[in-house]
Image (cartoon, rainbow, N blue to C red; front, top):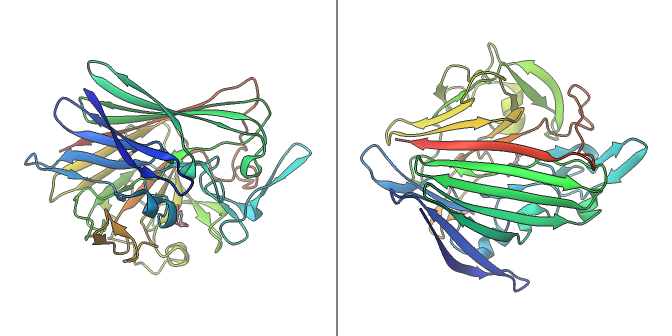
Length: 347
Ligand code: G6D
């Protein structure tokens, strides 16, 4: 195991962006930036041992700062949308940035995806890890509490990437973190992921309003949202279904089965690459890159098409303070927020 550091560039504010590449003994690697905790590359083999990068991203910081739909980033303080960009805790109401119409998306205008994180490195015999730390001050982007956040990326010799999210606060607050990587297991970003097979152990999903905030809970049975048996993402994506039509594809939280592991499996038949995701979280948002288009050029050269990548964002119920059909969840001063999601790549 090894960690290779390299300069990735400087932000508009002149902050140095460093790339940390975690390399295992097989030569397969995960690269992470201190800017936004972005997963910049994941290099894993196909069935013939050919190594390709399987996540969308850029090889320059300007594009990440100015033209990135959350490629690979730590997302928060709250992943997803907060209706009307407001929430209450007890008698107190908090107002967040309205960076998505009338709602807050992914923590606001200058959220964790645009933050410079302090990184520490650990290399052991079978594990390489980077831990990213950031102290988010009280009322940053409108959220209460001085919140100390640690996100760790651990890469090992079985090609498993484990992401742990930890946080503590000095005042009751809300926090719901995820990673927003776009996977394309073919490694060819000129293609889309409609040929990937996906299995999600979820009997229910969350229906969204037209403004994409959580509205209702529905069974997946007899709908295009039934991924309990593996099927290609493209099989039902163009069905005449209201939820698919308002979202221009899948962009929905799935409520995960609490027993079966791994809960999510993504596979690409032609290359033989497979991704198995195991999480202690309640939901996964499956977003099929519905708004990707040629203005996004992966790694400076490949103009993307719609659905060039699929996001599988594990998290708690989105907007649980406002979405009354799920238990609301806050972080209190005497508690610790801790959640772990593992991504196991096989071929
Ligand atoms: C769109 O609705 C989707 C989100 O789910 C996604 O995270 C974002 O694009 C990148 O707003």
